[in-house]
Length: 149
Image (cartoon, one colour):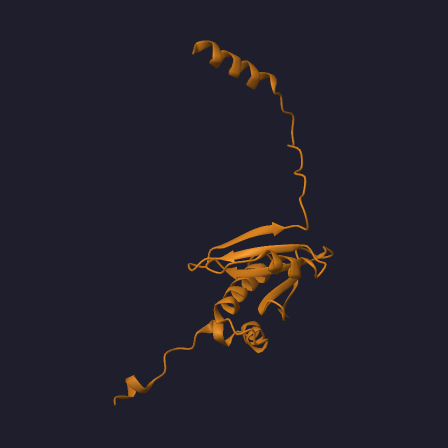
């Protein structure tokens, strides 16, 4: 064998990252979910600059959850990172919501695209539209359109 074929490929930096190592030690058994959790961790901690981002194990769901604050002094939020090909049950969402913190679900695509969705306990009435809106113009347009038919 030549010397070049005996050399190991360069180490994957993700596998060497201390936070990834910490997530692996939680022993959730789903390496794809751990990888998704790490990508979300990097987005929250490095890109969005969340404060106090940490990882915790959900024994009931066997997943890595992330906790952190969007900004200094903000309430703690729980983030459930999940690969897009994984299903999610109402019971799973309930387990995370029962922890008592606001929850974000983060779908992680194979190309590392992240999509966050805020989850709530029950239905939430949407905020009214902001800004000065006048319905009059829209009504007049609708009447005009009906007359032309």
